[in-house]
Amino acid sequence: MADTDGGFTKNLRKFTFRALKATIKGALFYAFYFVLWMFLAPFSELIPGLQQMVETFVIVYIILMVIGELASDTIFQYFFNAAKALFVISYFVLSLNGGIFGMTFENVSLTIDIRLFLVVAMLLGLLGFAKSVIQAVNYMNTRAEYKSL
Amino acid sequence: MNIPIRMIGIATTFFWIFLIIFAVSALYSVKDVRFDFGEPQINPTSDNELLFSLPIIIENTGYYNIGFFNVTTEIWDEEGSPIMRGTTFTPVIKKYDRITITHNMTIEVDDLLQNYQDYLFNDVELRINAIVGMSVAEVIPVQAVANLSAFWGAPLYDFRLGGIDLTVYNSTHLRAVVPIGFENHAFFDLVGNMQLRMYNSTDSLLSEGETLIEAWHGSPYSGSVELYVSAAGATANGRFEMYFANPFFTIGPVVVPYG
Image 1 (cartoon, rainbow over the protein chains, first blue to last red):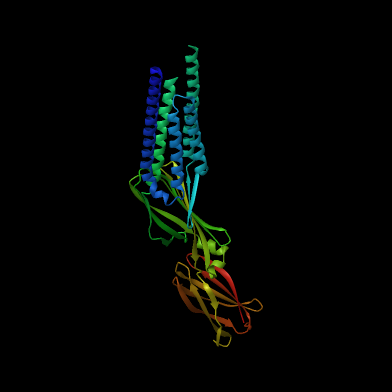
Image 2 (image 1 turned 90 degrees about the vertical axis):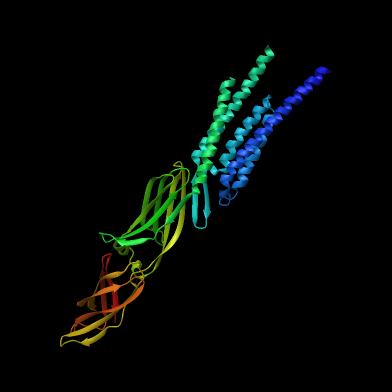
């Protein structure tokens, strides 16, 4: 009975710690977004849908980050991290229209070529995805070693 | 295995932060780039061409240099044929710098009017394609394209020769006064020599005369040319051939029938 109570308390403490870590990470990420948005805000009037685009990204990213954090020390953590990396890549490709960003004001058309930024972002996303896969392999490997011992 | 994975994680996070801060600050610094346009000037060159100059003042108070700044202006006629093109390029505009560049376009009026004589007598709406390009922080290319239209004022708008005033000069010749009228809608003053040649109905040259034209831009002109015509060859109808030469262009013959 005492062992079960001890195990429950230990698990609760673990979960509370994960939840706290996830909350802190989420809050820090939101604070980072909040600071950056102060710089981007003047452009939201010029670029229709910019705020919605950034907010959607931040919301989904924070949700995946929090779920991944809550599922830490399980294989699902790496699934969520891989999903997060793939989400970043696909969201950038789709929302940035392949890296050529165009808009028209009256008789002036403006084109911004952010393909270089997109390529670097995709490479970083792929690196994050590769990291998650390696972490998952390492996790399974460690577990297999632990079981065999 | 854990240490390399952790190092990948740290490196990825570092690069992500760097990339996002760089992209946002580069975009934000565009807000602090100011463009101002000076008074456009039109001056004749030594080659008797017209030089159109537009001073552009650029003040870069952003965080990064601006690279590959270029201004291109293309002028097209109503049918889409190119008339002229001018490009101005500045490799780098450093941060906290204020520079003035002059965008020049040379207009070869003579070639233009030789190819498109319609521009001599009729006002035309021209299409201007202005392209401004630059690389924000020297890595993010940005291009703005503006489609504008401009008015081309004909230098000899509504050109006409009035009724010939014939008087007897002597026993063999008649004195003919031919009134000339037009409006100079061009953006330059018209100072030059106008020559009239008078042919009778059998294509024989009867006489020729010339006059100095001084027509200021945007104003009407009326004058006359005196001709001394052989009475024997004069016919009731025929044609005039008009030639006009000034520092910017030479035209002729422009045929105007009479009678």
